[in-house]
Length: 430
Ligand SMILES: NC(=O)c1ccc[n+]([C@@H]2O[C@H](COP(=O)([O-])OP(=O)(O)OC[C@H]3O[C@@H](n4cnc5c(N)ncnc54)[C@H](O)[C@@H]3O)[C@@H](O)[C@H]2O)c1
Image 1 (spheres, helix red, strand yellow):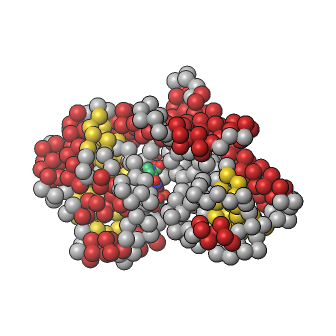
Image 2 (spheres, rainbow, N blue to C red):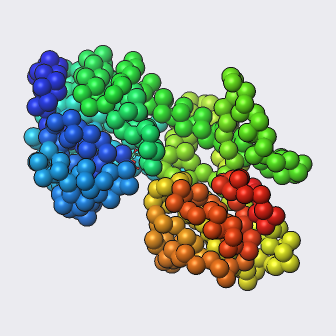
Image 3 (tube, rainbow, N blue to C red):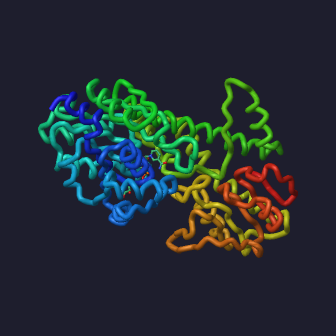
């Protein structure tokens, strides 16, 4: 089947769209294609998620039941754990996790497992797009050979692309539909089919010349953030040593209308992207004989931040004649960033463990995270911090009542500058 037959199906919205992995990336994408008029099938190994989708219940903060339910009821969106539906599909986007192993090497097992399943039901005329963040070369070196083993030829019998996912959970302004989409194909025909596919449902598509370029785009974006956060965290530690207010410095520097972009210090990196993706790049780069020194250094500095926060807490309590051992410390916000429920790699968890190791008694508040597993124990969110010795703001959710916090807490350590409008002697900033 030629590119023109598949392109015609895509343009006429008769192409049957499949999304493998219905998480933070996959479910919003599935919803966009269903809204654009395609019949969409989501495939996930997790039956709780597929049942939830089929019942019109969303488990992703950015997708509301009122949006999901009608798409399911209209037959535009369904979910299954059964990969054999791929026999009926024209396109498949792979949105499975890409974590790091303990050794900081890429864990490709999810991509491999998903591709193996796709290969079982592969047929001519399909478009396959990898969206999981990964090292440059994954699509060409790992996914392509697995698909070509079926005997089908890329650019002729099927089309293969990589398109980095840039979704920012909790961002009300930029979501799947209006975040520009970069796509690169294995051949120019693949890129063109991929461009056509995304332009049906998303506002802006940026084609690039290869899958490797598209893979590298994502890693540049996230490495840029990780390194600049590392830089500003180091500046924050320098300022601390020199008794300079780093927040005031950044705000004044940000008045420069060109050549400066503000980044802010924080308690450490969190989430499934910024702390992880750059190590995919450094791993690959090492194979080519180039040590990714900026990445390693920023990783060390950012990894030091939870320790720096704990020292701040210890010093702040000391100034109030309290030892950390035996003090009640309440963590305000545990998700890795504002207004979401995701605690993956959250620095709050490191801070809590470090505090416990030094004998502090821990509790937390997070409206988005009602329960939390810490070192094998389950903790529950509690609004009650009146009896605690210190409240530590790790994540500044917009729902929080900071004025109430300032009036009720004995001592506050603010790692996010959320309280910058309140000048109170009992507040210690990072
Ligand atoms: N979360 C983000 O903000 C974000 C942003 C940009 C890019 N990414 C990247 O997108 C990818 C997916 O991330 P996510 O946050 O959506 O992950 P997620 O964990 O929320 O979702 C992944 C889903 O894939 C399913 N899954 C795992 N293995 C599978 C398999 N073999 N077959 C079918 N389903 C399978 C899981 O059950 C899960 O529902 C990752 O590579 C991530 O780095 C994530």
